[in-house]
Image (cartoon, rainbow, N blue to C red; front, side, top):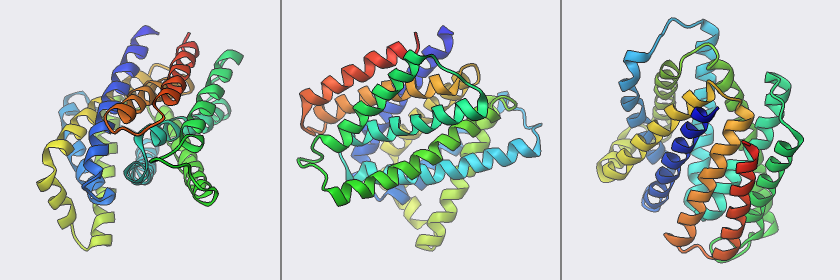
Length: 289
């Protein structure tokens, strides 16, 4: 029980630090070119897990891994664009917690994972606090207009449903595929997906190579941190319930990115955001008791 919690904490910290560097990088880079370069490097770094991999897997598992990679490609590109155009302390909470709703619902019906009433209440509070952070508090110095708010809400709901489906596939596949095999195949497929996208959109991989050339240090750092974050999460998920692991990961990630947003990027509403962070952290702790 304790071991998977430690792994989730490590994963969240790595992911949070990566997001801070990513936010700085996206100020100077297009989301598609950055995402392709990032995915390409992670696929290379994932090779380090080859000694622990076992590729004797079923056709169904391979198909599910590819479907997961497609979902990850779409959701990562969308979240990178949202992060590029909005404040980190507002976008990271809603992007992290809204998918939790669909993950918990799907885990209940598809995986038979049941939580206590207190745990469901905790998840509801996490969602409410994150919603307030994005839609109620000012973003980049002003509150979102109704039309813009509705546009974001539609995008976020669709993205969150996809993330929920991806998380269920992730958990289901890790029941039969070890984490090393999963990360190698997933990252390979994601890299291929992004290379296809950038080739079709920009008629070649020149944009990706330019991104690697001009921002190789931050993108390499993000790729290393993300590789560590993903493998620790996959190992943790293989021995825990997705309805618990994902909300805990998201809560810790939110605290890191919100604090970074108000301190490093001076995004405003510092005391209100820190109060909401404290609420999120408290109920994340209650969630895993």
